[in-house]
Image (tube, rainbow, N blue to C red; front, top):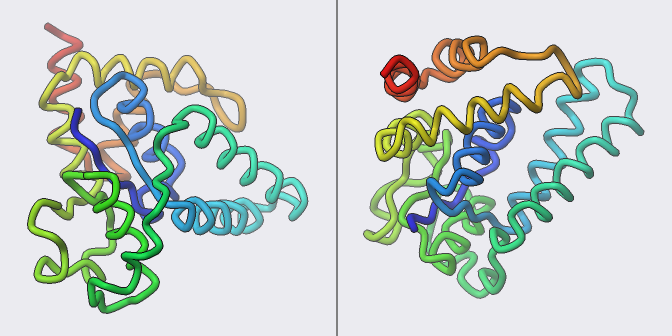
Length: 194
């Protein structure tokens, strides 16, 4: 199964995170991350919730719950033993070294990130691609659009816990319009009508 290391930048947007992780639940790929990625995500998730008016204690609790759920649902995703490789790649931002180190230890074929400037191709091992969430979604959905549509249907069935109940069409519209996943959504819409 294809393995991808998900950077904080693609896990921070809630619906995008839910879609990428739901694809993994459907067996489309194996997600990986480092403890440092989860720590960054928890910090940024809490800050996002506070900015939206959620009280600090509640925001901290919800962010911690998210990380605990990710660790529980993807028990084999958190890569261990990456620390000795940190600092060996010469990335422009040393704070991103843990992402590449985790990808190498995990045997990942891709790092999924929106932070391309800090992952220059000449610093990344040649067996690892650096892809945007949009590119990764397109490639993953192309393998089995029906399985990807099942992931979206599952998101719709879970919606409403911390916001509005969302229909499949609304989720697809958001993935297309907010996250630019045009090709991925087109393939899922085509699969739904087939």
